[in-house]
Amino acid sequence: MLPRLALALVAGTTFAIAGPCDIYSSGGTPCVAAHSTTRALYNAFTGSLYQIKRGSDNTTTNVAPLSAGGVANAGTQDKFCSGTTCLITIIYDQSGKGNHLTQAPPGGFKGPELNGYDNLASAIGAPVTLNGQKAYGVFISPGTGYRNNVGSGIARKDASEGMYAVFDGTHFNDGCCFDYGNAETNNLDTGNGHMEAIYYGTNSFWGSGAGSGPWIMADLENGLFSGYNVKNNAADPTINYRFVTATLKGQANNWAIRGANAASATSLSTYYTGQRPNASGYNPMSKEGAVLLGIGGDNSISGQGTFYEGVMTSGFPSDATENAVQANIAAAKYATTPLSTGSALTAGSSISLRATTPGYTTSSLTHAGASVSIAAVSSTSSSAAKLAASWTVRAGLADSACYSFEARDAPGSYLRHNAFVLYVNANDGSKLFHEDATFCTMAGLDGQGSSLRSYNYPTRFVRHYETVGYLGSNGGVHAFDAATSFNDDVSFVVGGAFA
Image 1 (tube, one colour):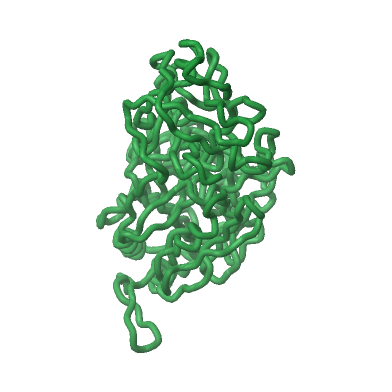
Image 2 (cartoon, one colour):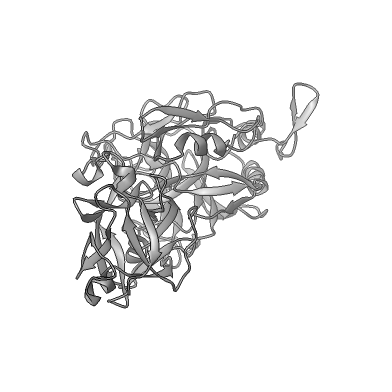
């Protein structure tokens, strides 16, 4: 029977749109974990969606929906984070089970933090709108991850469960592993069948679908599976809508992968349904009941992607229930919004970037060969020095909503980062280069000019530290991440080119 998907009775007299978890409950498979930084997933939910921490004083605040069952109050975040950086520290579980997601601890792989923990996501890395209201998703860069190892009510052993997630279909890579779902409770690889999580990306080491990806697959530990055949399911298509709905569900010797355009009122397509994979250890399953986001079960941290919302259920949802949830997601009307929020730059124009740090205000971003630094440059400098400190603005190589900066004295070479050091390198045409060479603008953090935020590591900004150019984070693990003078060091006045 189709669950009640359109209306739900509230307080006996008022009708409101049912949320995804109301729909799952009506279908007999209630949510046991419900995570979203963009909206409430129950029609009556008014609690906190997520917590953020700002870099200026390390204080935290919670972000709740604008109204019961509504979109996140982005204004709370914008006001709290004004003039500083913010990280997402907790993604709260709306189900009441307490399955909150926090900074993932080290496991088989250690995270980048000094204590081995994973990085936290930038609070501003994934802005969107839902029905025209601003919200923020969770932009996962390699090295970023969230986890809860003491899951409550999450399926264990071969128990039935379902899950869905809404992802950014344009943000992915071939690293292992951008996952959301059920994982080990000790951050280690404990064997085949100990996970059941949605994977999204282009990793084809274990398995793949049709085309070149990205694919929706299942991370069942020691394998990414698209169907019964270990290596390939040609019926699992490349799917890269801007907003992707991905579902995964499993029960005794049966599981399914389904997907759809999250911004379109179309039913989910089934990419696989049938027996567990034809490899040992996956029938029966040995699920452990932890919950993770952005990483593999052993804390593999090389995947990337963007998460907007997702749930896990008790029991195996019907296709009709999942289709009703997909209709609800489409009705939320996810849409893009500008990644650059500072003063607009004009593609094709030539500019300079002058430092605002006291003592360096006559210095501008420049390069000598591949090396990037700041140096004093003026109208009386040599022609070579003036050219080296001049940049041509281009539409972002990875995203035209942001910018790339071509060296005026080296056509075809761009400002980019590698291992968080800035370089000027020739464009090799790769996806990684395009991402490394794309920056989004925002108002200068010290109140002057503009700050240039990395497209693929949005916690990091173009920074000069001891005159050398880096991609710095506010108080991170490297010397060039030092919080002292951070706001000044990442703020540049955009001027005309020197040459």
